[in-house]
Image (cartoon, rainbow, N blue to C red):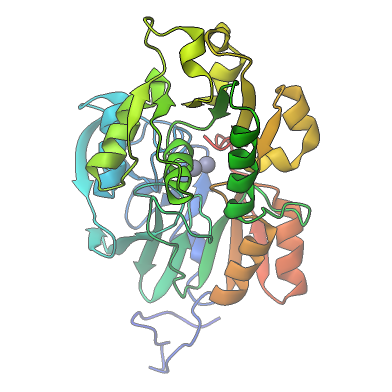
Length: 358
Ligand SMILES: [Zn+2]
Ligand SMILES: [Zn+2]
């Protein structure tokens, strides 16, 4: 094992093509109960408990929590946290737009699009020639509500694996939207109630409906209002939206209506105000029939904000990192796939990130 002298050269001044063996990646990032910790920069990535300094990849509640001393995130993610937790969700904030580099001790941190939800980013952490990328949650297919995932060459790629099993292959969004539009046309007297996570999925579904030519007003549950407004504020055109919680409206007014609500509302008495509602749920988990049945979903829509098996393996193959670390999800199959493809893999089994999409 050589001594490391920095700037990508060993003690004899030779260029070291891959530094993982000289400078151990664990020196730059390693798992702690609070989350992934960076000792030289003294910060955590997506900590699940309050810490002094946090770098946050995106606004979903399992990654972005309130109560940190300081938060570095994209301006969009900071806005989302303000909407969800109030102005004083952290002691201090620093906005890092995509591609801008921030310094933490001797460590460079930059945020690069992850294609997951508005503002979602991969945290690219560089130190003494070693580059580690923490993906946060991500997907590779097109999403009209956020910029696409950008692969970054790195020594260690730290990936999620929510859908890290070969059985998880999400169909094209277009197919799922066609199912929905066909059902809407088929049942003009019923209301279509779409369960969608409040951050990201709801706005993506609305946007996909608009792209498919649906231009009528879309009814939205009150719990989605503020995030919808925030998306619109960031330039995501959602078209005409009306509240679905207006007490003056009668059941018959919702015949043929499309209503978007958080998934929890689908099991609520709230649904009784709609005429013979068709329960739809937009989630990667709708691939699993038992889950759809369990939730009483009549029309499952397999639309996910997480990479499926093909997207996960394609991404690792494209980046070809020295090592892959897997934060959460179905870790074993992806780790095995990496090993079979000559890439060292490590399952971190981080606790605190939800299996669900939000
Ligand atoms: Zn997420
Ligand atoms: Zn997550």
